[in-house]
Image (cartoon, rainbow, N blue to C red; front, side, top):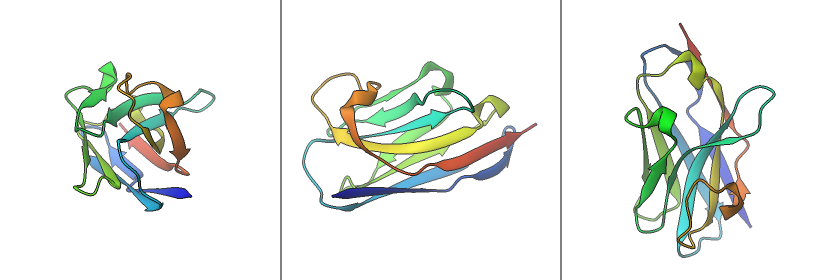
Amino acid sequence: QVQLRESGGGLVQAGGSRTLSCAASGHTFRTLAMAWFRQFPGKEREFVAGIGWNGNSDYTDSVKGRFTITRDSAKTTVSLQMNNLKPEDTAIYYCALGTDYGTALYVSGLYDYWGQGTQVTVSS
């Protein structure tokens, strides 16, 4: 009943910036948690950044100080501002949506809906 669509991926030079966006369509509900995960070739998806229903946020250590996650007032759109991009940031980035039960936002099982992914490639 909920569909997520990511956009904003592409080719970026190292040190550059890129903003990803994710829009949720369909039914909306309370106490939303939204997050970004990424997947490197041959690897499992890993947590990047998440935001809870009350605006609390969390980031994986490798992106702290470089990435910022935000959400609109309706809590149906989430963005990821990526600054000072590095080649190791190259991955498919996925948007995720779930219910905030007060647990850590990096737990993948928290999220029930996933987008199709958008490719981010950082060249040196």
